[in-house]
Image 1: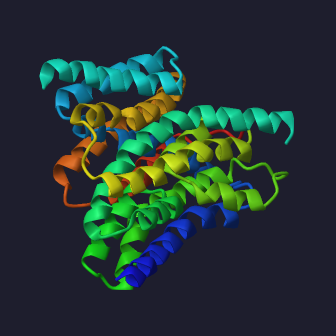
Image 2 (image 1 turned 135 degrees about the vertical axis):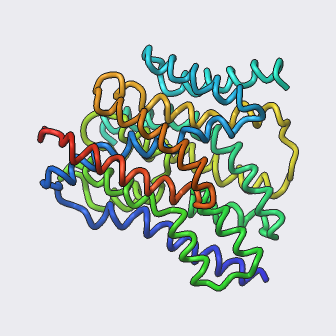
Length: 102
Length: 233
């Protein structure tokens, strides 16, 4: 069993690391194609936005506290709060609101 | 280390701390799953150190429990992690031609949603030492968290887990909102992403979140690129 688990771990790690490392290693020149450059420019914002909502609402004990964290986080980031501060503000919003909600 | 690299390294540690905290909570839960599958704390640590990917590891552990064939675990982990291909490709364009090649391997070793996020949020060329600083705290947060989850089981108080579970989403918000405020196209893309992600979750819940993320990213970023190509800067 133990050996089987190590084989599984080796296989999944090899796949994950290939996926993460190969594009960085293989794409070594600047991409000149405007369409492709534009696509890669928009990817981060789109992909992080897709991952954030609605997932944040379902991450917490109550959907209301999750939604509140989203709203408070957006407001804080809008007015220039740092990465760390926005993360903490979201956590505090959930903790405090769940004292009442749960 | 030059003073510039030292500063980048310190910045990386600073930005990595909230990541590490968020990771700890998620990976602790992951460890509880790994415990049911029968992984030892060391095996959990190893899997998490080498993969550092929540969905990918969940899928992997679930298939281990079923004694799935090797090709199946490889295929499923690939699908769960395929979005990193896009992230790694984006990061490849942030490397200065002067940065030695081997840094690409070490930076690639820990491409995660969160480290990708903080990397692209920085102006100018990617400084690998920034990533190393973030990895220094984030990787132990993730891998030690997994091992402790296997050892301890379900002991974290629910209220704390609930509150900390939004830490990583809070970071994503902090990364996407300032550029969305500055650039109307990015702002529109973010709003459309929120809306379509919600609809996809409602109507295509049988498709995994990872696959939905890739599909929506390609469609929305693709449409933005076609209609609003960026001027070469």
